[in-house]
Length: 215
Image (cartoon, rainbow, N blue to C red; front, side, top):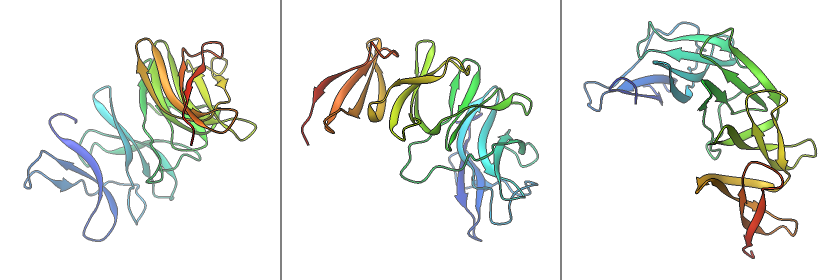
């Protein structure tokens, strides 16, 4: 929701993926056309995030590369802010989202962890962590799932500094991180390969399996 309207990505009559806007009525639903710098086959907008009175999102530029875009809900107010390197739109089976945290937006959707303050100068790669996802704000930290140097999907934490970004535990495939009663619950595989219910306080010592569910 943005200023009484909803922005979304959708295909137009030509089959191109563009940016659309609606106020909930047929008459108030239309494509934002005439956006300069977009790839001929479409903008492919994804992960739209309301931030500081505007909407940030990922989109395809004229060169065919994905970048950070901003919109005010009009064609004239929509433009690319900065390139995003290897960031790409999430696959349909991937739970991807951009997360507002400590006055910045944390960007996932590719092999790198990026942050932005909504400006070109303030958009940068924080660190290389492959496939960061399931971003969950917990107290003064951000917990998420990512691939470690060994190729395992583990639990990571960041405070948006390089030194403050590290793997908490190499529990395989943590998923569905959920804040509950001052802790974070999540699903993950234990050393035996079984999926169990886990809990964490954001530290290695404070992370353990609650129960194993065989099969």
